[in-house]
Image (cartoon, rainbow, N blue to C red; front, side, top):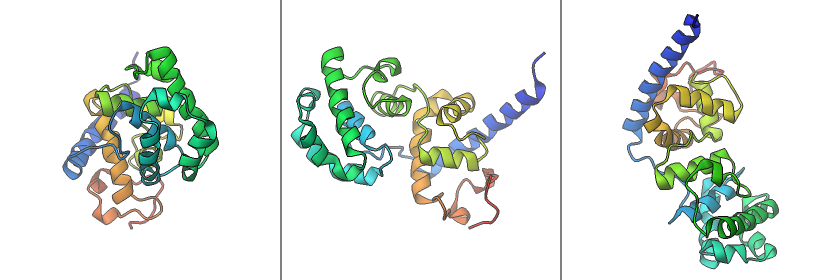
Length: 224
């Protein structure tokens, strides 16, 4: 027999998720990726750089990177020290430079220089995991392959009681189970903006929050 308690809890989370989606849409009607890019290749490179780095910093670095290496073919032929110098301020620049060059070589050698449009193919590229693949597929191609779980999404979804996990893969599965698939892409964009503007780590503006009436504020004891 089905677990009626589990089914009831899932139904409640779906109901809460719909209310949160509606409130986020009203607050952030234009859901946009914060990483500046002109095409899929640029967004893929920028997302690789964004690991443990702010989007603001990445946006400061990428113009010079893309000016020197505007295509996968050119980046694939780049020298490691040259790429490292351009991205040094992003942190972990040696491993990121290795991944960028490896990613570009993978695109050239395995995909004729074009970004594949499936998660399974994208994650074969160096430096590309589920999160990065989801960002590119959702933002550039409108393909809802999953839900992007960054530090903002992870933190806020726990506060909202939409998940009890700290594992990004489990959080993604929890969100995919309660969010309409058509909302997967924009939900993350909007929640990331919300995390930067209102639900700020260590100093959330709870009294200004459009989600307050839907938020059990798990882990917080006082209103900010």
